[in-house]
Image (cartoon, rainbow, N blue to C red):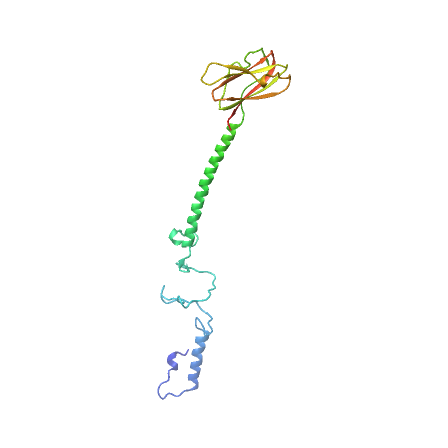
Length: 239
């Protein structure tokens, strides 16, 4: 196989057909048998003679596109920054400033939303508790009870749990009068007065009466004449 030395002409050497043949064979080898031929086709593995020594392109002379089946890199960069692979640790300093700012904002918003949610839930709980406390609270009842005339229907006076109103819901089997006995908190002197503005209450007709009370006031109910009654007592807190 011809070599470059074979193509070197010495002084006085005659150019022969063999010289042209050697020239042809050498160029044929370079064109068709080299790792990369004259047309840019690769025929063999490209292996550098030194490890991590040569560059392929430069920052201002770059390869336009690379098409490959596999790639193995110690480090891979995009726009001057390391590309993170699956399993790589992520540090805040590795993240773009814009991304760091957005992450910080997202964390701040998340914290704000969490605080708002907790505060709203607390308010909702308080509102539910407040609404629940404003509903009528049943304190005592008697159903179809025979009530002697002007005698307490309830064995013990009923104590109010809230400032607000006491509601008397009463049904009498005979026409008659209903009385509310009220003992203000801190006193031992009951006050007895007619309900329904002193008018007679028809038989078998529901009537309801509200009366202002304070917490720890005591109330009871009486009727006249004796009759069977159904009575419900409610304490309704102030709104």
